[in-house]
Image (cartoon, rainbow, N blue to C red; front, side, top):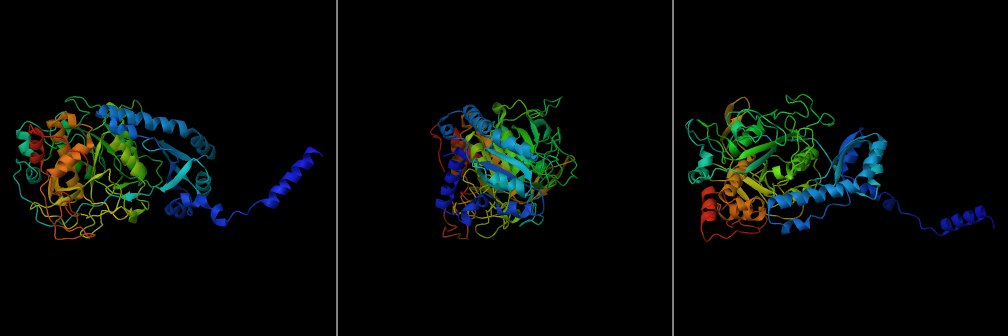
Length: 506
């Protein structure tokens, strides 16, 4: 029998005994795709994040003692997995002629493509999921606060800094010295009088923005507004809206004269712009997270984990109503940042007063330390989002703590100052508090569990009248205030007590 005839018979037998593939099974690749991606692709090209099946195993980070070790370990493992598993995918993308940008903070790739590209990628066995990458608008600060703004003298410490007793910690000699705070926001007016001397890239005479600043806003973003005053890939810290400059002032602001607006004026700061004219995407948020693990120079080279911040402030959210339909889109990213020994503080959101209004990444995650907003009388702001987190079916209690967020005076672009309200203003208090505590006890650097537990258990307990999902407001913690309004002096004194034992876990 000829080889040709044998081959024909084999094919015939295979066809005769093959089992038909159900249509539902044939389209399993569609289950890998966020509905938003499929919907927007009907109109042409769209943006999405291609999440690969293999992700780095970072379980060994927990056993490492020092922040430097944690950062190096996480960076090495993340980049190794990405470097080993992405080349075939990147080659395929190059062959399709589409725009893409690889990441290692999670093993994923940003892609801009049409329906054919989406189907081709979803059918690959090395691809786990295609996440939406929508343009997400920053929650606006609250224009009308719950209570009148507190009047304070121009040369005084702001009321909110006094409320959490940060100035009492300064009097003990601890101002955040030796600590680096990171912020990702609308950008920063780096040479503002209240910020310039705390900027890590300023030595008092010359500015060096390498390893101190990164701009995640690129012109190839399909959602770009294209009219921001900072342009794209700015090599100089810039704020095209003002929100970022205000939040950084709450963390470190002090002009050395009449404006003492920051919780940790002795700390240094580095920054990343993740929003353009108030709009960001999961990709821009992830890019800033990645840069913080290993800050690079302005060309994106010379990544250095030794320059990573101790804490990052995140006064932004990615709500489902604006396209972030999968609540886990940034989960792996945030968890990896935490494993690198970096505490990530997040604003809880301004969607209160209903229960389960902490509903958007990244405040919803266990790995995020989320903050609600209080007034000058220590009552919860009506706009402050409440827990528990139900959007991911976890019923997780949130926020962890609360801090002043109504009528908070801080820096604004152009060397000016002004008051804003929102959980965006509350979160920076906690980032500044982290810096104060590490300056009291430098061994806490990288010890995220201990820092969070210390802040929680030294907060001023606050009961609420509201019961959320069976958790009475009289419970401590509760879904309104968390463990309570933060108290810097209480936390510092606990650290200095000779009988102090590091708190662990949450």
